[in-house]
Image (tube, rainbow, N blue to C red; front, side, top):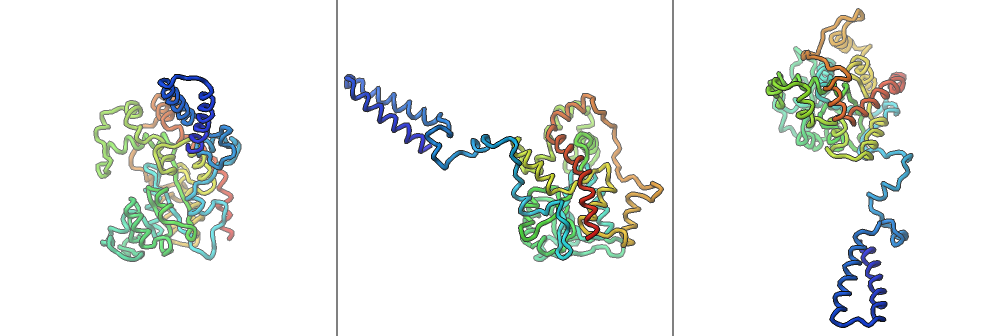
Length: 377
């Protein structure tokens, strides 16, 4: 702005010299000068930042710099991912502890996965660790098994379900303590940027459900889930189509917003997020739960086949080789067919989540050989 204004003032000076060569009545001269100055200020405010007057300047505003980039140029990775995460194609270290962070997405199998890892007895940092046996005021990180006679569940004494708890976990040194096998949180972007750093990188795990199926499940679940803060009994009197057009907007593109860390984002930010997912996120599918868990186990270096307790848990949750198992989803509800009005409304509102899901389906196929190669280390 300073350069532009100086340039415009220079033009004014030139114009004043020209004016001086004409005989203008003294009473009109001040009006002419005022008019020229106003024109100069207007020119300064509307000049293009890439005009000839700026070609020799180092200053080009960011908004213009982005527009000058080639469309074929690779999109950069989220800064926090580069600093805090280990790429999927990098084999787990045999000598260093690598803490896994699991993003608990509502109605996507996260509760089942959490129960499974409690059954395994691995050290879990999640919501309840700070509240079981009153560990809210602890001044150091500990792991503990509150009911050893009845359960292998092992907690870390923190609550990473909210920002305040995540900050407290950071202050206690959760990740550097190397006491947690897995951190389970609904706040992935904040938890990663707060708990991990360049000296203590982690692994990112996510279990994903089709965005529309997830939203439909959420609609029916919150009608009956009296134990949830977001319990909505009034939705019982609302059709799914009505809800899709109105109430569902608060869940619009939920996955993308959570990863980016804000509600409003640009297409460039979305593409940057997609590249982050491609390079750093170990993805699982709710429809392929057992296969997804096997991959997560490989990432966390959990040898299920040589551990009787692990084997028992896998059988309990996924059944024997004959296919028998207990169904874990307790909230049955009507299905929504692709192409129905409800489906189309939700698909349009969640177009970014749909694009992300297509990438996740692709990654689920391509990551298989990479992750199973970890076992040979």
